[in-house]
Image 1: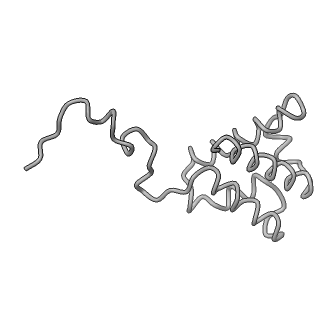
Image 2: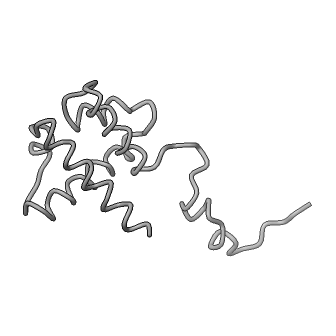
Length: 109
């Protein structure tokens, strides 16, 4: 029988949050799916699209997606808030989703 050794959790990628074992989608995947919903015309805006994915992503994961979008918006426009996300036109929503996905992807490489 294997015994757990103290301190092994420091080397366990699951315990460190690097691997998600409950098959939750990542923030990047969530943004890509939200983008697809907006692009297909199934949802008019960012908030509606992300909210529609609540079966795939829990509340904290959706919040992280909103924060990522707000961070991207604030980098390009200065200040940003949830009102800006909810009132964005389809074209503005697509541009912000694309910019956020690009920014996050670049950080992975």
